[in-house]
Image (cartoon, rainbow, N blue to C red):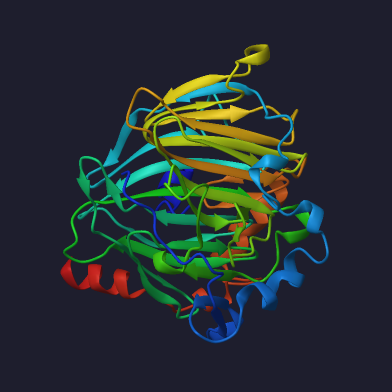
Length: 383
């Protein structure tokens, strides 16, 4: 079973980016069975509540603290991949950049897909263990708007819809079982799916959802004219900081660049970094092209940055319409990876154990015993 068939792309246009420039407020609550869930709201501050749980006092390891002027040596581009649309079955197709033979992974990023999803496709009840699964629903492309969302339901009772512009950051940890389907009557959905590996020490943590609505994702701009607009999904950029706290420290930015506009974004040393062009054309690396480290990429192209440097540079094509780019970076683990479909561990024995735990509904999968998602129940009624 491939990563794509194991789960609806969780980790799946250019219009003005929106969101609150202030940090979104949030409230934490527990779902049945101890599943930890965070949703945006009006009570409490997510950053204050959970930051110590993930980052402790490691301020120097936080992505993007400071501003772009602090980047003294942008990383060079070392690899470029063009992605082609690949239909997998009726109603589902993807453009895969990471997780293919040319680039099986970019430690700790296991897969990176842009996807389109519509009825009759669906991903009924299935498990996960050992990684973080990110779903970011895209809003508008230049060729039209996508109004659909993804409906989900998991074995702890957590359910809802990821609407256009929303993000869900799922830490599967020791085990999650869920289902995802196109939201009823909403046509074709488009999004970005990213799988981020958990370290060996975090493989068996309790699962956790962090859901952030589009209007609560912090936004930032580099100048009053809006030459650079950023939605800060995870990490920090231009003084705006996301309330999401990934278990594996990560940076995830949705960047809109007007023609000729530039963003220099700090990335900690020891982190892998890549950028995916959603729309338009962008340049990466130094503008002077020093050391063959510069590269230009068009829509549905992934660029991979080398590790030498303290940040990355993105520029909108000066002669074109600008670009929309997903910039993703995460702290590398440097560990062995063993994976089989929905299970990502460090050894083959651990993968086999995960499969047995799911089969026997134990060690993190107890709530799956006798549980059926609303989506699976509805499908059975109509079969």
